Amino acid sequence: MVIGELEARKQIVYYSRKTHAQGLVCATDGNLSVRLSKERFLITPSGIRKEDVTIDDLLVIDSDGNPVGDTRRPSTEYKVHLEAYRRRDDISAVIHAHPPKSIAFTLTKTPLDTCILPEVVVTLGDVPVAPYATPSTDDLPGSMSDLIAVSDVVMLARHGSVTVGATMAEAFKKLEKLEHNAEILIYAHMLGGAQPFSHQEIHRLQGLRDFYGIQTKVRGCGCRPEWNDSKAACSGGEGECRSPGENPEALSPADLETLVDEIVRRVREAL
Ligand SMILES: [Zn+2]
Image (tube, rainbow, N blue to C red; front, side):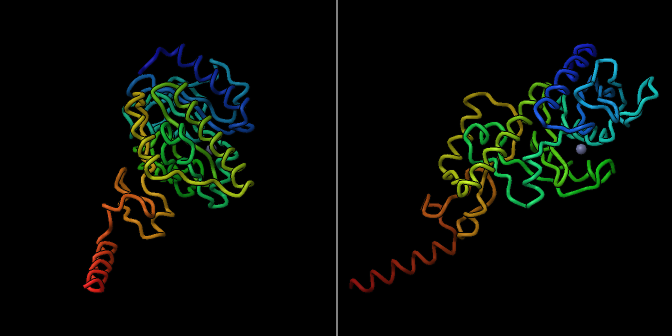
């Protein structure tokens, strides 16, 4: 959805301030943008506190990042925004933020599990984490390019988040959910660790996306690492994995061979 420039300016200002007010960016961190047309993008400028942004502070850049009729510099991470738009024809808004709790997970290499709360399974799916890349360089958009192509939410290791949507409101909602999920996970860790969903429940929840008409692009929760550890059959695709003891008809070849051997042994014993 492409909106008029004045409306786009108002939305960026509104969500810039909201992002700062909710502690999702600090000082001059973070940047927000809206796609105005195929070749024009409205973005926050470099070096401005997001709580202070006004509609006149924003500037238009072209698809190479050059300011259009402007001498000011765009946000230093404009390349991340342009890469997201390049990979996703279906989006018109991008928010790059520094949500502290979510970032903490990438610092400690603790999995930022987004597959344990029902609404997050449905709306965000399995949020991928891009490997660390130096901010403001070409390495950063390169590190997240393939991930933003398949997921509306991507974490940048040691750095922040990128959330996208058809509107600024959608991109912000995903950012809020991401950080709220991280906060709940921290509480769960303090209380002994979160218990994962079963494969069946994950599958049921992912089925609700169609029921509710949710159009966001997400990576399915698919296989759980702990299921892989227990040698469960796991291809990584949605609906093709199982937790230990579940779905016995989907045995791996090795498990099937063991089962057949056991049946043969018992039959021989009974003869
Ligand atoms: Zn940043």
